[in-house]
Image 1 (cartoon, rainbow, N blue to C red):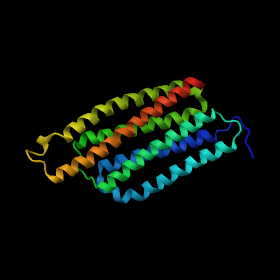
Image 2: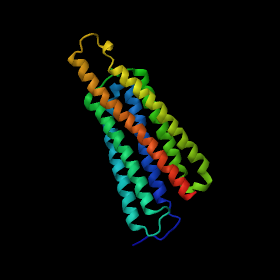
Image 3: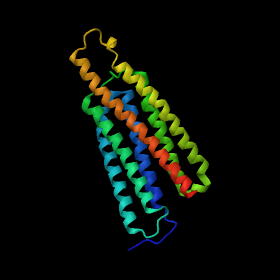
Image 4: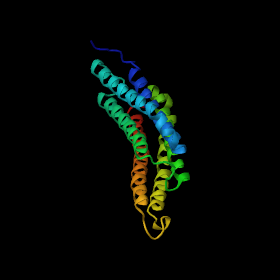
Length: 219
C-alpha cells in the first residue's frame, strides 16, 4: 500500500506540473490584456487549465496519503501544494473576471496594464524555474535564490505600477467635471481587475518567500 522509496521524484514532478499551469495562466492573461478580443475564444482553454490544476492538486494529496517516506516533510509538501493551487485559483478568477466584465481595451493606462501583466509572466517563469530545480536543492541553491530575488524585484515594480493605475483610474479630470454612469462602471470593473492582478503578483512574492524558507531548511 505504501511507497517507501526515499528518492521518489513524483512530488517534484507534480509541483512542476502545477507551476506550468500557473505560467500558462499568466501567458493567457497577458494575451487577453494585449488583445481583449481573444478572451471569448480562449475561454475553453481557461476552463481546461482549471481542470488540470484541480487534477494535479488531487494527485499530490493522493500521493501524500500513500507515501510513507517523503522527500520533504509532509507539512511542507502540503504547504507548497496549497500555495501553488491558491496561485492558480487567483489567476483563474482574474481571467474569468475579465471575460465576465467584458473589460475591453479601456484600461486606465493600457501601457501600464500590459506591463503589469508582463511582469506576472516574468514572475511565473521564475516560479517554474524554482520548481524545476527543487529536486536537487544543494546543486541549484544559488539559482533558486536568484529567482526568489527576481520575483521580489518584480513585485516591487508591480506595486508602483498598480498605484499609478489606481491614481489614473480615480482621476476625475479623466472624465471631465461630471462622472457619467458608464465611467462609474468602468472604474468599478477595472479597480477589481487591477486589484486581482496585484494580488496575483503578491502571491508570486509569497511563493518565492516560501521557497526561500524551503531552501534554507533543506539545502
